[in-house]
Length: 203
Image 1: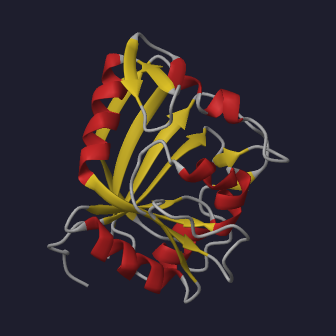
Image 2: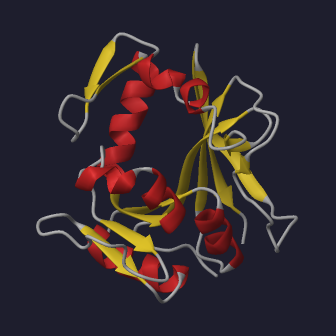
Image 3: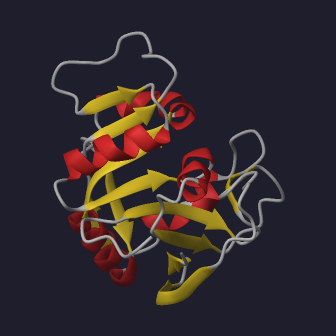
């Protein structure tokens, strides 16, 4: 498969040093995401009252990332864990939720969430249309694994937190196409609380 000319499909996540995006029993988020409040640069979000304070390095990178991502694909598990972000995702992007059904109370008027019951491939295609040429961000865990297995994933973006969780949900859980080779990192950004790494999926 050749290089895509449209926006790429990118998996984005904060991961512990031992490879987990959450700890046992959905724990460890305070340690994983300490870098969101580890600096002096204020980064406003779409959520009322939610402002992050990051290092200059992380703030510049996050703002650049947000400008490049036009839509997101998430799994039903994350959607349920966050309560659908109360209808207002911090990144304020169209979101396609991969789900076998539509949860009670959804969709809601004015909320840019869609529910796709036809699998991750169809969800990515819908997100591409919504992204209008920009990147599609996909969440880690099951969605990232399915995208990689289907040959849909172009890049893996990792924010590596200096913590060992000892178990939980791996970034790529139960990968059927392992070993999978990545190229890079082509970008490394460090701050005192996190190391941001960017890899390309080798095809």
